[in-house]
Amino acid sequence: MDIMFLLVPLSVIIVFVIGAIFWWSLRHGQFEDLEGPAFRILMDDDSPIGSRNSSVSAQRDDDDRRIAMRKNHSKTTVDPDQ
Image (cartoon, rainbow, N blue to C red; front, side, top):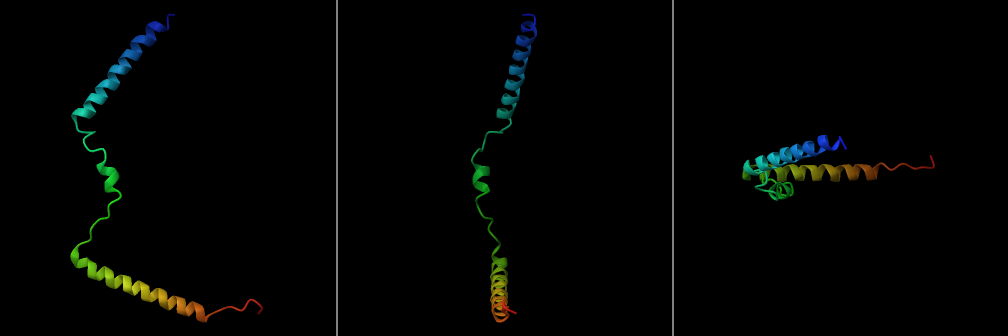
């Protein structure tokens, strides 16, 4: 029973501390935009207009390299019987 004299005031102090932290977070805007970060991670960043042309040409270069590698790979087939 003596432990109750310690636990009850301690729990009341903990409740007040948690309440103070929650009140501080409300006053400082921690709960202003709850959905924004969730949507922001799904949205793509827009690239500048000037870099679109260079990215398209880079994509074409990558495609040309892949096609060339496939052609070279199909020419060099290995016979498993040898």
